[in-house]
Image (cartoon, chains in turn purple, yellow):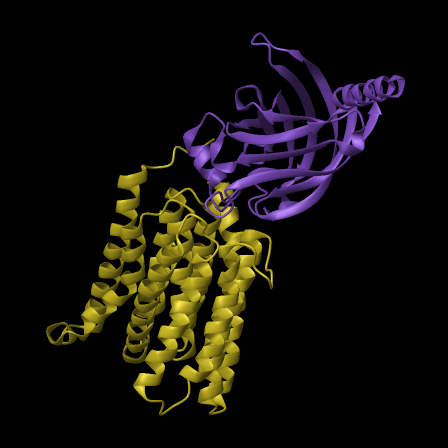
Length: 192
Length: 288
C-alpha cells in the first residue's frame, strides 16, 4: 500500500514537472506583429530613409526553458508590402526589387537558439528572400509575456538587424535604393 | 534630367560599343569572303553587346539563372548559336520553321516556369502560344532583313525597343525597362554600322537574337511586372510593319518615302502599345 502511494506521488510529481517545463507553442498574431523595414533613398541624395511594412505575417514559435528546444518559423507575404505610396509599392514589388510574382513569400526558419542573458537570445536561422536563402544571426529581446485581457497567454519578441539586398540577388538600381536594408521584426504569439 | 542622361549613357554606351566591335569583326570576315562566319558573328555581336548591358543593368550575369530576367543573356547566346544553323545555305524551309518553333517554345517555357501563380496548364498553353508567335515574328523579321537592304530595319528595331523601354517604365519596372533600353542601344549600334556599310544584312544569325530579346523583355514585363499583354503584343509586332514596303504600290515610291512609311508605321504600332499601358496604369508619379 505504501509503495503504491509513493508510486502515485512520484507519477503525479513527474506529470506536474512535465507540465511546468513543457515547451509552449505560440501562433503569431498578425494583428500584433510587425515587419518594418527602412532603406536609404539614394535617388534623393541619401537624404531620407524610406520606411515600409509588410502587413501579412504568419508563423509560430516554440518557447522552452531550454533554449535548445526553442524555435521560430515566420512567413511573410511579400505582396503585402506597404510604404504609403502605391507607385512606390508597385515598384518595390516589381522584378527591380522583391519580384513578388516570382517570389511571393519571405521566410525565416530558426536553426539554433542561444540564451544571452535575461530575456535576450541569439537566433541563427535561414532567411529566404527573393528566392535566395542565407543564414543570418539576430539578437532577439523578449518584450513581455502574460495573460492578455481575454485571458490568453501571450508572449512578444523583437529584433532589429541589417541585411544587404545584394546578398539576396537584388543587385540592380543601387543608384536609387541603398544596398543596406534595416529590418525590425516584432512578433506577438498566442499560446495554442 | 542629368541623372537620366548619365544613366542612359552608362547603360547604353558599353553594349553599343561591344556590338559595334562585334559587327566590325563580322565585316572583317565578310571582306575575306567568309560570308558564313560573318553571318554567324553578327548574331554573336548583338548577343554579347546585350550581355554587357544586362550585367550593368542588373548587376549580375549568372550562368545558373535564379530569376526569369537572368535567362535573357543565355537565351540570346543560344539564339546566336542557333544562328550558325540559320546561316547555313540550302536548308529546307520546314527545318528552319521547326527549330524556330522549338526554340520559341523552350525560350518561353524557361521564362514562365518560375511563375508560381500560373498553373501548369496555363504555362503549357502560354509556352506553346507565345512560342508559335515568337517563331512567326522571327521568320517575318528574318524575311524582312533579307529583303530590305538599308538601315531601316535596325532603326525600326531600335525605335521599338526604346518605346518598349518607356512602356516598361510605366509598368513599374525600371530594370526590365533598362534591358529594353540595352536592346535599343545594340540596335542603335547596328543602325550606325549599316549606315556605314550599306547593304549589310542582319538576316541569318542576328534576327533570332533580336526576336528572343524582344519577346524576353516583353514576357518579363507582362508576367512579372504590370505590362498589359496587348501592349506587349503591339511591341512584338511593330517591327513587322516593315512588310508594308513589299506592297506593290509602295514599291513605286521614292526609297526615302518607303523608309519614312516603315518608320512611321513602326513608331505608331509601338506607340499604341505605350498608349495602352498609360491608359491602364496611368503615368508614373515619379519622385518617390
